[in-house]
Amino acid sequence: MFEHAAGSGNVAFTCRHFGISRETYYICAATYHFGQVRISWYLARYHDIRISAGGVYKVSKRQGLNRLPDRQRKQVPGHHVQVDVKFLDLKTQEGHKIRYFQYTAIDDATRIRALKIYEGIRSRTRSTL
Image (tube, rainbow, N blue to C red):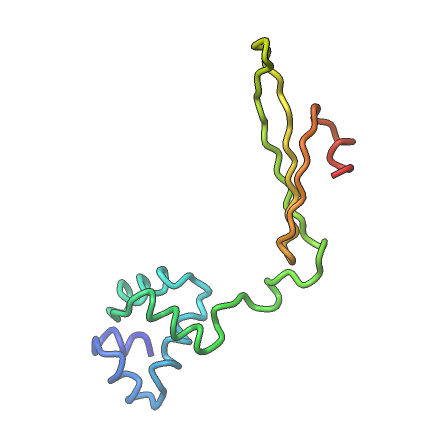
C-alpha cells in the first residue's frame, strides 16, 4: 500500500484503489509508534505523501491512537518510580560552600512527585524518601 502511494504520489487515489479510507491509511502509518512529526517526516521521505504533523495528530486522535498501548502504560501506582538526584551548592552568609542533595521521586503511573533535600548522599538517605 505504501509503495503504491509512493508510486502514484496521491494518497486519495491509493485509498480508492485499495478500498480503504484515508483515515485507515494514516492509522497504518501511525502503527510505527512514532510521534506525529516523525510520522509526517517518514511519509514525506519514504512514500512522498505530504501531511502536516497536525494532520497526523488529528487522524490518530480521532482513531484513538494518540495513547500508548496498554502494555507500555504504567497501570499500577508505585510499580515504576523515577528517582533523580541534583546537587545544590549554596553559600552561607560567611561565604562557605555547603552542598545539599535534592532527591526527587516521580511515580510513572500517577505522576505524583516527592521531593526532599538532604545534607548527605548515602543509601540510607534514599530509602527515607
